Image 1 (cartoon, helix red, strand yellow):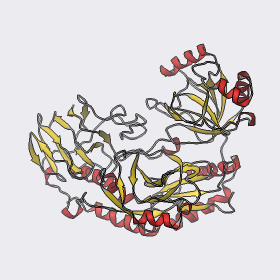
Image 2 (cartoon, helix red, strand yellow):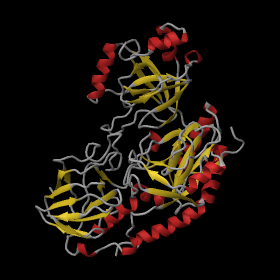
Image 3 (cartoon, rainbow over the protein chains, first blue to last red):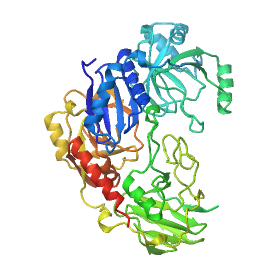
Image 4 (cartoon, rainbow over the protein chains, first blue to last red):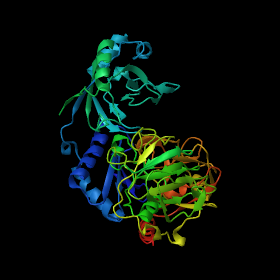
Length: 241
Length: 313
């Protein structure tokens, strides 16, 4: 953590408030706490915010608030940007079908690489509680931490060009879920029938920055049943607040 | 209902409005026109609010059948505009009647032309906007580019079309898309990750537009920009105009459909008032970057906004 956050210009409409050059829950919590305070104060001229691992990008309208005033206002909020400033987070249950050669197509390879039987990989992964640091890159893609140390694994040496939508992947100490078919460098342990991004839904994005996520192992038949309900708009994800 | 029918979609034509702010924190980019100024002027010419939805046409424009009388204006890239085969002026409103065929041709200069219709295109808004985001299949017409046979529903004009033709854009406010534009940038957020020679090479240029460029990013090729210690950073937010420099030392200017976050060093950020110019540089055409400070950028922004306010007479 820097002694004082840096205010880095990002063109004429944005400033990056950088807290550290490191990834940690403490740093990310301060980023999200600052974002939350900005939302609560509704600072005139602040248009939009984008939290990431260790920085908050703040978009502003310079005709409403100048650089000096913006930086002074943000700086005054920094001391309050602490974990206790954040509201309670949501806990979202994500059903995941692991034990299936098609859906969890790299589960066995992960087990071999880590020297664990596949069912132990599943037990460790579904027993953990993950924290969504931020949503980014593509619509609805969560960057999550909270992986058990024993599942730490280098990313794929050669990223695949296509990862099916819903794939649950691990890489380094992170876990992610691919909302849409996309390239990927994470090992795929399983697949969720939930849709993390559905442009046809009134609220197209399932997960939010700060959510906690738990995976619930399901078998293939339950996967198919939930997938059908999701497609018909009848499935509600279990969310505790 | 009033409508325009798509006889030929052109190369890449999408419905756009001013965009979809507020969703970058969910990974959804704002989209909207690549050249905001040209888009806004098209709307103002026909008497629409700036937020009305129109068409963004890329390099080769569409051919449309007019189903009901309407008032249109074309701005941006120099696509010749014809009505039933006769050329009509650009940067000024044109009144059309039912049965007319409106065609935007091939642009010899510039990339993106804008077509506004009085009343606006009335597709249902998604997340508060009608702008099309192609990669996310969001907004516009089913989140996709136009195709033959599409019907574009038009809103009811707020007043009679009579007298609507008299507006125009002042000549000095019509940009030239030829030559080698200078694009103003603010250094940062990661300018300190480049060598002094790298920053100098970047500011000397010139950089040539590559054909792989799209609404997500303008890929450029020119003098190599050298890093001090690698091109990776801990992923952070990518501002509009953020200039990523990846391992090959070449810059990519991130535009309206950009990824919300990324893990490459960003040497500088193109100022909002010059984003539209980047969007009009053709593959093979060159541009140069010029450094200004944040405060200078804000002063220019004020002047440019004032200029836009008085551009339509």
